[in-house]
Amino acid sequence: MKEVVNLPVDSIEREEYHINMGPQHPSTHGVLRLVVTLQGEIVKKVQPHCGYIHRGIEKMCEKDTYQQIIHLTDRMDYLSAHINNHAVCLLVEGALQVEVPERVVYIRTILDELNRIASHQLWWSSFGMDLGGLTCFFYGLRDREKILDIFEESFGSRLLHSYYLPGGLMQDIHPNFQNRVKEFIKYNRRKIKDYDRILSGNIIFLERSQDVGVMSKELAINYGVNGPSGRGSGWACDIRKKYPYAAYEKVEFNEVLRTEGDTYARYMVRMQEIRESMNIIEQLIDNIPEGDFSVKMKPIIKLPAGEYYQRVESARGELGVYCISDGNKTPFRMKFRTPSFVNLGVLDTISREMKIADLVAIGASLDLVIPDIDR
Amino acid sequence: MNSIYKYFADIFRGAKSLLIGMSVTGGYFFSPRAIVTQQYPENRKTLKMFDRFKGEVLMPHDTNNQHRCTGCGICEVNCPNGTIEVISDRIETPEGKKKRILDKHIYHLSMCSFCSLCIKTCPSDALEWGQIFEHAVFDRAKLTKILNKPGSSIIKDID
Image (cartoon, rainbow over all chains, first blue to last red; front, side, top):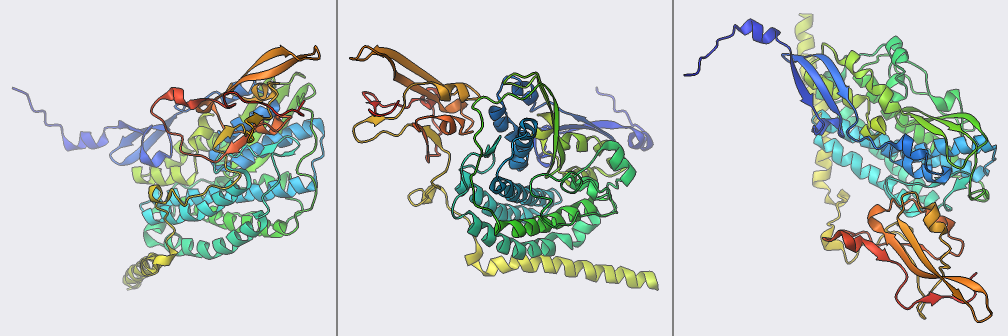
């Protein structure tokens, strides 16, 4: 006969237990395993376990030439592939002191911003879905499809573009490109109002996001959480403003800042950034100068021996590429400072003493892309 | 008294926000023309990919079954993951020169990462992108393709 043990109710409630969230959990957006220590429903500790999708991209870079590295950077943060490519291209061009044509600079800036809009739209969709609004997922993906169509027409791929090369672009943009981008901006300005009506003012959404996962400015700086997540805490950390690259010096745009630091602030920063990106594109799209789409580079690029660092503002924060060259055709060491990995670090601190349902909202609001964490 | 007023105001504010959201979704319910869903397997006949779509690497042949590949192997060197193998023979031309001709241009579609470096770097423009995207097969060996057609030769004036 099995003996039934009657534990006092108190001790069960006080007992801490562990739950594995992931690696196959629908709200982790990828194969991220979070070991959550719970007391009842209260989160006491979150331990992320990385490495499920580690492909050794930094090591693979050491055997590849500088042109071949481009296609690997696509696969780190697949939602901002253009921006990742841009970082490596700027690094190589800066090291060789190559001046790229003005046309390339303009096209790259426009494509970066389109990519940022697409990334934020996908984030909006999945954020809505994580908080229970399935409709957001359909609307966001439908509008993102318009951008992917522009990409597909111009260079044949939807997600992993490999379109930039050191010294320029793979091929010239499609003749329809400018018209389609202008059409899209017009369309998106209309649709983004729908986004606000569906989600931004929704009472259930407000209750679940306001004062949830508050990150102070000091905390954001201490953990290095930059990008839209850091700007939601009032930290002015936009690389496009601080260390301008490409054509960002020539355009006027505002750095979006919120001071609350909660999940709702991070949400509103991203929604406003979509609008700012559309402003940047509108300023550039009519003024693309004529010219070549690339400069002639040597077939085998050899960087002079030394250390190089290049940073760009990806859709999630600062992407840094650090490269040590020993003068050969392959780098001696490549290191990527990816934004998602750094932003994951703060998840434990800001989700303590919150409910487990809030953990989903906080994790989604940091906009983690798992292949970007593991590389 | 104030807190009771706030309590009811919150209820009305919440209900109003829900109704605003539902007016957006309801709009689509009554205007079916705004629906953009494509019925994929049914529309295969009319579905056309863009000209620049990267489906698979092809080697275009003209009507005389001639291609432009010299068998130099630059695509093989530039490929980041060993997708392409170029097997070439050395023959002696009637003038007594030694020349390299293409025997087999093997393309492993299963390993391709669609970076277009082979097409970009080819000195004689022998490769191009094909627009077929339905690559699923039951046998993995079918994904290894020989791009030059049997019995094909090189167009004369290409070095």
